[in-house]
Length: 442
Image (cartoon, rainbow, N blue to C red; front, top):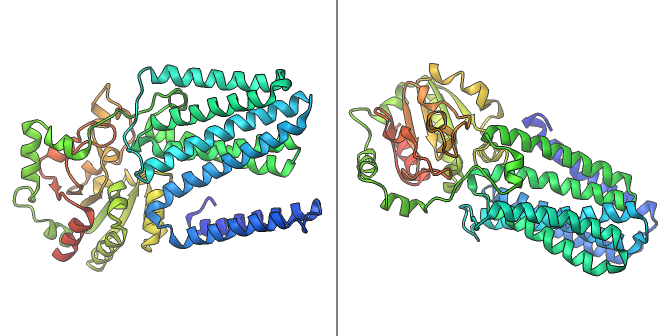
């Protein structure tokens, strides 16, 4: 799983291992004849096959969030059943209560994340008055409710209800505060929490296999979360406390309408190539090109056009690489998945630290729907949410073409100085249309 080329085989191995674990459990407990289990296993199999066939790559982040939520729901159900049979055993009650809390907050948090990603809710952060204090209080009450499940077994259903409600509320309060820029962190954190919930549920029912598998998922998800936090210049404790790295911003159209006159003027000027520079000529002359994909490419489903442009550049004698920022898109590896769907060679997808060394010697950088991850403001705009964010240094390339929808700030709400930098060619509009223009010009 550590190599992109073998990741698909790793997924197949994981699926086969889960199927084997299910059959082994049936055999160990002698429950092959329980038709209810086969019925629900069949429902899950059909649902999984339908999703595998119908879910598009662009919808993968919300699918991952939904699957995390399912894992949390299962842990919640196991926890409640375990509590019913735990009796006075404090360890069993404590672990089951913790599984109930973590499973419930994973379920509700994942539901909110999936709704945001699927645009059933606004993707900008929703901030309540005193939001941070509310989330901190929710964490404290959640821990108290878990303690109550251990100390007051005679109030079983009341304690279960309070724990589920408080934990579920914390999941909602945590997730609604997160905007699109923080979504990779949330996806990886919820993945970790789903594993933690499973591991703790395994402790509650005395199942070492569930503990081991849940521990692996929890640990790997937490490591990935830390990688995402460093890439976003965020602290995990701040996110858990409801203090994320983003701030509410206006919708793109409203932001453009309300922009000051200099930005409106820049928008009008950038609709045409700057000066006498011809983007088609840049493409034909370039011998080293770096393409930077972002969420705008995903929205426009333009990955196949990016591949066509890359093929044309290579046919013209250029060396083409792709710069992948750790938090580009809405889940870890989002850009890699989309580019792989378009048959882009894995070896051409370079990580941020490696590709940043190449920008200075590159003839051309082409940005497709990326904003904050290339913004020099991250290094100069102190006091803003974006300050300190490690970026891709697209501005160091000899020439730069940016194919973005408009000049509106990203989720951090900070204007990108590249948009008005002399010599930068801005091609505004849907990424699929601007890429097609570049392709036609070659």
